[in-house]
Each structure stands twice: as C-alpha cells, then as structure tokens.
Length: 120
Length: 253
Image (cartoon, rainbow over all chains, first blue to last red; front, top):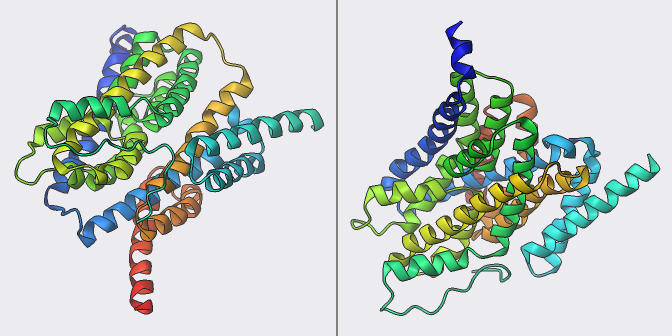
C-alpha cells in the first residue's frame, strides 16, 4: 500500500511534526491573538478569560501529578501527592520562592521512592 | 497588590531613553533564570524519552522548537511511536494545545499598545506562549511601561527557547538512558514548578480561587470526559469561579 511506503520515507516524520505538531499547536496561539483583538485589559470579560486559563493550567498540573507518563507512573499516587504538597508548603514557608518548593518536592519524592523500594 | 518576591526579576527603573531593542535584550537577560533552568530539566527528561522512543536528533529538535509546549510534544511523541496517522495525531495534539488559546487571549491585551502594535508582531510573539513564559509574563509585565512589554516578552521567550533548544540537543547526545529515579524526578519537576509559579502569578483572589478549583476539577473531568478534559476543566471551573466570586463580592459589600 502506498500509505505504508510513505510512512517509511525519511521525510514523513517531518510532515507529521509540521502538520500534527507545529500547525496543530500554533493555530491556537494565532486564534488567541485574533480573539483577543477587542478585549480590554481591565474588562470583566478578560478576568473571566483569565479564570478559564488559570483553571485549565491548574487542571493540567493535577493531571500531571495524578496520572503521569513514563517511570513516574510506577510510584504510588500518595507519594506523588505528598511530595507535591510538601513542595507547595515549602514554597509558602520560604516566602514564595519557587526553587525552594521545587527542591523540597524532589527531595521528598526521591526519599520516599527509596523508602518504598526498601520496604516493598 | 501582592507581588511576591522570589524569582521575579526586578526590572530596572524606567528610563525614557530605552528603545525596543534595549527591552528585547533586557528580556533576554531576564531569561537566565530559575524557571528557565527548571524548564530545561523538564526538556532533558523529554530528550531521554525521545531517544528511548527512537526519534532522531533532528526530529527531537524540530519538535522542541516548532511546537514549544511540553504536553503537546509528549502527545506527538506517543503518536509518532505508535505509527498513528496524520489526522488522528493532529487532532490529539490540537486537543492538548487548546489551552494555549485562552492563555494567549489573556496575555495579548497586556503586551499590546492599542492602535500601534502590528498584528504580525503579536503572531510571532505568540509562539512563545507556553506555561513558563506565560506565568513569567503575567507576573512581570504589569510593572513595565506598555511600550516595553512586547519586546521584553519576545526577548525572554527567544532567550528561553534557544537555551532549552541547545540543552535538549546536548542532553540527547550525552545521555544514553536516564536512571529511573532521575527520569521520574524530572517528570515531577514540571507540575510542581507550574504549581508554585502559577500561584505566584495570580494577581487577584479570583485567580487563586480559579487555580484551586482547577486543581480539584482537573482529575475528575479527566476520568469522566477524557480527551477534551482540560478545556472543560477550564470552562466549567473558570466560569464557576468567576460568577462565584462575583456573588461573594456582592454579598460582602
């Protein structure tokens, strides 16, 4: 079949990257630019748009923690949640220093992972 | 107003003599930052994944530079490795990228000088919209003069993108296979970093409320409506928060 032949060419992955990657992603950014045309910076509508964007990114965050890809998915879910909470708590106690939060979460995850491996 | 200190770069005092080019380079300098390093670490994790999946170095780099949104890149990597067709792959990536639209919509009025900024400038700058640059912009730009915002944001965006691009290539060539603990830790890095910086970028209480609602709603919607779940989380959670906070404010005053 010709379709299979096309898939074996060297350039097929690049067509995939250009169309299914670049175009499928940037088109949303362009739509965002045109859709924002009449939005004023202090309008109620913009506050709503920001609420939607913020809730959406937050949803992505908890999805990445609860249902991760790759090896991280082999760790227990409670460990990932606890590590993230520890990180956020450290972020808060350090007067909102992002790096402190990130390092605390990583330390918690690696320590917990090691313990789970030992005990399990 | 609560602008938390921390990684936010304090922009130098505003001098009228600064040109757009000056602001571009200032933005580029601001990109040498903790967020950029964390994002780099996350892309190092992707380089390992790409190599394991069997993607070549040029393919890996093309995805990094052209897509420039980690979740969409991960989705396309999965599509390429499973031999998915062009149309289903494009749909999957488009679904993972819808979130960029409301983010761009929220950012653009901030960087635009009404009646002066050309649309094609905004279209180019919009390519840098991804969580890292967006959060940085929402947090930093309001303190800058309006004319400075677009060049500053573009400088920051191109600085981060070129740095991450180079480091992804180096990581691809240098690291054969990451040890499990390192690979796993790199994957958790991204959400924790997003979690902290999104809170830092929230300017109003309503933004923080939207964030908490999204955190709780995200996994629930994912279980019931996988596929378009992020968009629904944003629309349902964001709208509910918007009107909920409106009622709360009315009730208090």
